[in-house]
Image (cartoon, rainbow, N blue to C red; front, side):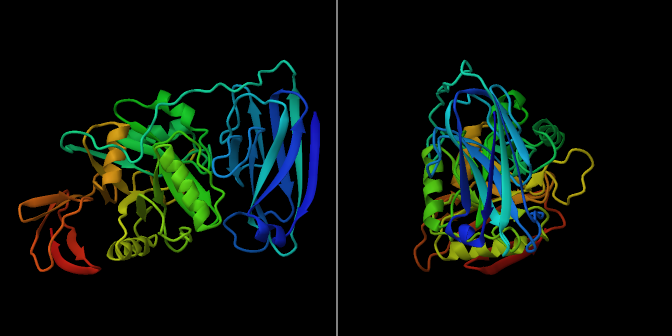
Length: 423
């Protein structure tokens, strides 16, 4: 079976909705579905003007409701011009499984539409088979609580890792196996694989994990108004958010399914975060890639949010896009590294430490590591915790530094440097 869909998209369509849905029907179940598309005046997503950038994805007959469309089958952004879904395998970024009869929707993301609009053509090919499996298997997942429940005992495990990385399941060229091999070579203790708007990499993580490297389930919710990591849930999280209310619904959905949410690279060219911070976000990425990449903007924003009374913990992530072959990008895995002070070496231990704010960042796995503590009137608190101090009452801070020789330590309070010391 082959079907074609042609049409024209205008800037008015884009203003009405960032996403454009094109329905098609499979009259019977299928064993294989292949979709390809092309459109006029296509340009690279790195370009700002002069053409169109249209993203690609698919929902099956189970539905495309927001948030959390049950029929989500995959997303490739503008990284691919075609995808294939079969019963047992699929193009990276897409989910294999039954292809039942019914109405499907190709979803086009209208990232950039120029003034002349975009002509598009979609070609749909299916290997129909009315005897093909059509029922989805409901695989029960262990309940995951939000927030992560506090673990007993003291936090004694320092674990280093990277909280943002990508593979060919989204817009990188390297495979999941290549990424994990590099993480092991760097002796990272944990790695969050956060491919854009998909969870097609999730089913492969358990087989690649071992005691030396914990692999966190992750997804980078990549909208046209900012990016957000979700860690710790195996559930797909929607990305179709235009307003702060839309984004809040996605955050609530992620929390309901046990995920932690972190605003990514809120800085010029990050891209910036346009939803504001009156949202139940858990952490903010204040360090992405090499420090000169405008990370001072993110750090200043985080400090301002703290002064305003927001409770947001800081993390870092390399945003490494795993290459297949020689590296040419300045983004490097583990640069920066996020250290967590965990109560146990486990997924739960890492997530609980992140939620509690027991985290510090360094330029690389061998860089400085900090532990901040404060005491007042026989009470004490570690980084991420709160210490109530009466107006005018004195309190003491202690900073323990590992691998800090040759660096300079600054202590900041209420947006001002209150102490500076060479190490």
